[in-house]
Length: 441
Image (cartoon, rainbow, N blue to C red; front, side):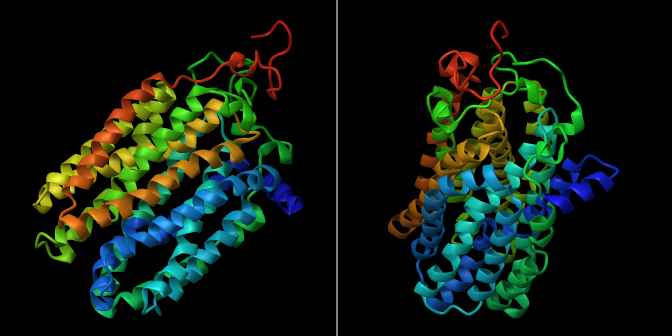
């Protein structure tokens, strides 16, 4: 397919990276939201009431999908580094759509697990890795902006799909909603990505950002790279030898415990307090739509500020949202909490995708990002089940939401020490691809 990609790149009046961004954006808008907790949350009440499932049982499918995603992520990463994102995004989109169609026919909890878990696995690992790594590989100087645009696509899909699902449920039922969303995803699936999504610009004789950027080699520690010549391309082993790598793993785990644990249960949290489902769903939509401006805000902040400060800020905003939601009993306060939660999560997503590439380079980004994603989906696996068990035992989500928020606030402050590794981080640059020549740096 490289021949087709090269011909399209030559014919394109724009830098081909913008085509890659567009392909990633379509997948992020249509396929990724389908198996998100923002969408599942509107199905929790009608499905659990019809079949007598507990909240913990439903949430367990999210957690199990996260476990599988954490297991396969280290396998998916090297595939992306070697072959690129096209096939991974296309196949994952198709699987997610077919799983949604099958969800419309389930009647037993084991059937729900059988079809939801594979779809959730695709959402949590291959689709996330494929779209974000594709964009990061094609941009260096403009990477924050490009990732923000990609996240705007995802946030738009996340904000619209729960409302569409709730509207269909209200008229035709939850089964028709699953059928409709699944067919939509298959119809706009990943065929264009399979055909046109090239791995890196160098594969087509191009340069990142279309050749824009500085000509310096080796950027100062802390400041993000502005061109390919400023990147420090760590291998996975070398990245694991840095303190910042492990701090980022802990941050991802703690942050996405809150993201999944609160967002999945926020609609049931207010329904349990007497808020009608048609009103409570606005917390899910607010959570999703607030990620759109957040992606622009935090990407602009990352362009001018060291990543560790941006990670700390986004984590503290998420913690504020979780604690606000914990004490909210009225929908107005709930929407405010959902806004804080979503705005901060927008920052978490941007930094999860940006920091790995900025800290450790592009050549082994799939393998390195895969381990960060494993920590992320590990948190997404734990959060929903922990909150579900809490409400089943104590009859309220308050304690779980509060614990999630306080824990993240502490971890976020620790991120102030996660500085960007320099040339000396792996034995003076020895073995690092792209290391400076003797006398440089």
